View 1 (tube, rainbow, N blue to C red):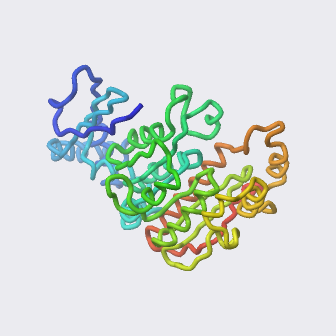
View 2: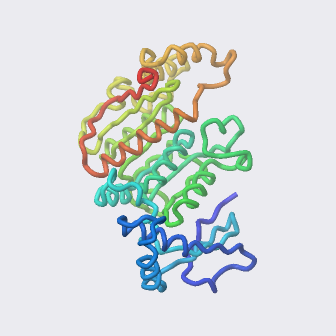
View 3: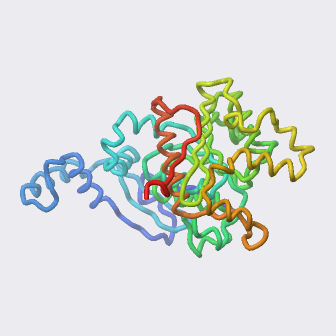
Length: 346
């Protein structure tokens, strides 16, 4: 199955046959008035006349028509610039105008769409990167529904396609490059520095992969091309956030030096015991909550995999989105391992 991105038209006459038409213009223009004129409240009588004047002055404002093939809906809305103004109006001034622009212009890539799908949506909610290169080969299963923003109708759908549709339904102007076959060691470099059809290199790479080999290989590539890497790891109700600023530290040790002199080629001869030892070093067994430690002992016995919570995935996604904002705006965010500990907070 493939999906077609939303098609933006200039005229209603271009609508495909037998589509459902929705017109959002009336509510959008009213909302635009109150956003640009915060001295007025919707409920006060004094706003009535200025609002009518505004609506009259903007009756010929630029508009577009967005067609969603998978929804069969043809929607009349405001232009991209005004749509973005409306969609990010409540961000102000937690995120100021210049910060929002820099955040929007960052080019990011995400591999692994468990926590990654949450990251994509949080970035979209907050008016983040317009361009995202996203990858996952896997299909949605019912056991994924405790942490993916998906439901029963999406079971069996490729995770990349499902995430893309969610983004485009919020931001029809988003530029997404979809890698629904995932990435391999043969094309990981292409994903990071070129993309399909000779695209541009990423500004920030987000690693939510399961493959230990690809985790390490991606960092060697990012260090060579000076691309920062972010990774959020579930730890029960808590998060471990890894920040590796290869963009400003070209000699930074891979994964904070936790893997020693291990290189991607070492996986050719690595046995399972060596792999497990390396994986434990990266996660840091002592960093895990007691309940997570107990869970790890049960994998393959009473548990089929590493436990993950949707609430934790959302926290990790929020941490990554803030980190991207800081990097995009050249704010201080040193390399290191950050612990977001809700257990301690409560």
